[in-house]
Length: 193
Image (cartoon, rainbow, N blue to C red; front, side, top):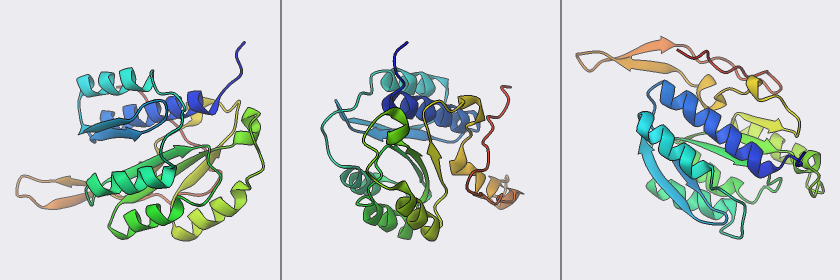
């Protein structure tokens, strides 16, 4: 049996979140770097889901720009009402300033931190400081460790946000109040329709 890797977990979590968002009719894009650079513009539909899945099967870690540089580049093309979902094994806080700049422009964020130490990697960075900083910014975040069961993962990016529908007259109606997102709360995937 091959050991679990942060890359495998990141791809699985990213694919699950993309699937859940696309099921709800929300546009999903992909912006990542590693062995190669990917920028897939947000879109909807089954064809787009398959394109995302095809790309995610080829994602590999590699030398590329830092997470901060990626967030900076992404925020230049992101719309104000976008949500950035960051899935990273980085326990360093050097990517928080670009994230904060995106938040001040009206972008929402959700962070999934992959605990490198649980995957047998370098565990020297202390994620508790990063978690504290993200909590202070009001950014929903979770830590995922090796061996976690994926059926408990859910799109955290949408749990803390209100849901609206636009009527025929163009007026927006509140469909769902935001739930309070708490550290350690389990995630559940919605049932297939």
